Length: 447
Image: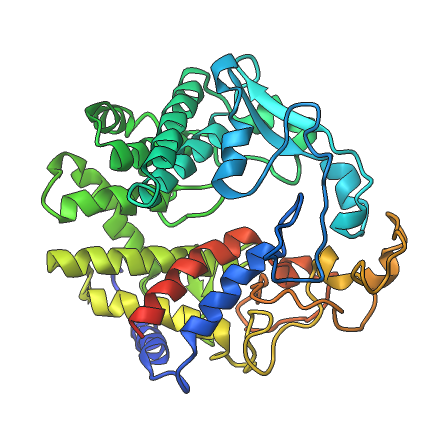
């Protein structure tokens, strides 16, 4: 049988999956409420001196002395500016804290008494991956602030340029330079090459400078733009690179980037139900599933790219041919919306995977601050091992981390153990919520 041929059984499976994913969902969700809560989650992740408008009141100041040996830190882009404040000397700060001692304790952030060692990369100990990702974030943020705060936008872009130059000149993976500090928890498994292309793509978009266009074209093969095209996350940027760059091709402005559009089209086809790549599957309930832990990170990130590409195709009045099927903008939008609705409760268990949204949601999430009594409820210090009783408790978390989206089902049965020790299913992360914010923002205005 030809490699792209489908047996009758497979054809019926394809049709069944498409009918499942394209069926009308339950009563419409309040995307605005979900958006508000998904943003609120990030306030629960703050460290440092909390502002007076902090809405999750069970949190308190924490990590007040972090980085005292090298400077202080804040949140978001200000944080990234602080971590790159010594880029002129070839230094970027990448981590505060010892992962081994940190993972050995279950305590509130307000009580942290583990090692808070500051780690950095430099010319002799490169980290092109983390530096490239930082440059990409700064460049992207400069676009956001361009009209609202031009001076700040310029600062972000200039810093992005400097950090990218450092990352490219001194190539290497940060987990090789700082192996004992970052592995096995935060190793760069995929390599640093994709982050360099990712940064160059955002700098090209933010600055419109010819040198970044030429860098992308010159390094496309060397930096392996066509590798693992259906991966997009904190360690692998390939699908994101191809989708981002393809926008210019689809708009008819950059045919020299046509190979990136080809890769992006292949990514789209690899995610379609029934035609999907072996690494991208769907559960019986219709959830995107990839092997490994914290499956919702794949659900939100791939869905975000599906939606973004849907918009690009719509503006260009084009479709993606996938065998005998055309991936239309409407189909991709619906597939992305179906994933969002699954997260919010349209699933076999009838539960929302966003804490605080809907009538039923995870109660025992793998989150220290949420699972331990707040400082106001228990003013006394809770030590490293004293928190274990709360970790293993069958009781719901006392502090509701509103907006947190957990790892969710990690198999093809749509099952979910609402239990703290099952961290792959019950742990929320910023990289799960971040793409979801974009999805919810779109569906709030385009339900």
